[in-house]
Length: 341
Ligand code: PEP
Ligand code: MN
Image 1 (cartoon, rainbow, N blue to C red):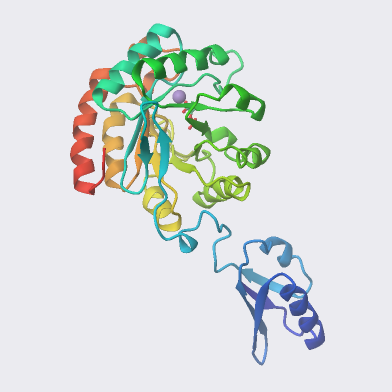
Image 2: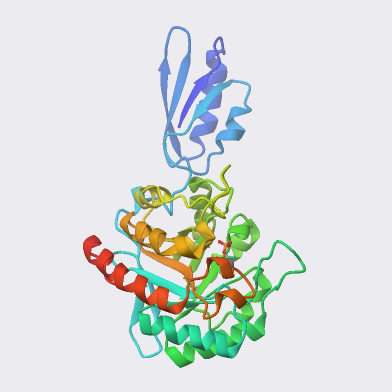
């Protein structure tokens, strides 16, 4: 971190300021010019609040050199992290560090027939995980809100029928008690900066699928991961799911350049959601392939046995045959990338 001191500041005051900074486990290097003094802070500056420093009467400008996240930072953890999800028959299914995770299923669990049928179809096509929302964050309070715990029970039935580990969204911390059988807890875009929730999740031993908020920067996504990690858990999967931009031809703008950026900055696995990223089922296969080509560690996508009748997100849901055909293509992409699928 570099701190430019205001011109004309008294040397004694600068010394006192610097001594106070050194109390915080950083070393301060002085660079005294004829006009201005610049302080260089070396060491772990993650806990130093640059904005608070900016308010100090001696400070002209503060510049961060190091990222504000530490546990999520590749700098301190050069090798890729891998998230292992135990399988009922023994062994584990992995995401990251050379293993692609394909998570497929409906936006919401709607009935036993629906979830079991989709689960069997995606399993036969080669998906690694089953998704299905039971608690749905809907823009309108009058829209289908999900089946709640009943939906989770059906998802668990589908897991038992197929052996696929399950992924479902948690909206509030008091729901944790009913998520016992859920293998990966999804934190949706709307909750990415629910800091109380993130802090509590640090105590949770299950993997967390953390989706990027639709108006959040990639650094904010990494800081959200840092919250969970600072709480004690490091089993996090980051997910790019599209952001809001000025253009509306797609539901969101799928920011695929976030993938190589996040992979460069962090050791955590990064997956892509082409369903919410585009909102258009016909675009999903192209963007799923593009995600793998961009270096993603997997994808999460919506598959429905009858998209026209879906209670949520039918327009962006692909059918089981389209998913099966996409999986064939993805196998080729995985081979090019040298990853296991
Ligand atoms: C979902 O996965 O169904 C969902 C609501 O996603 P997001 O939080 O990315 O909107
Ligand atoms: Mn959805």
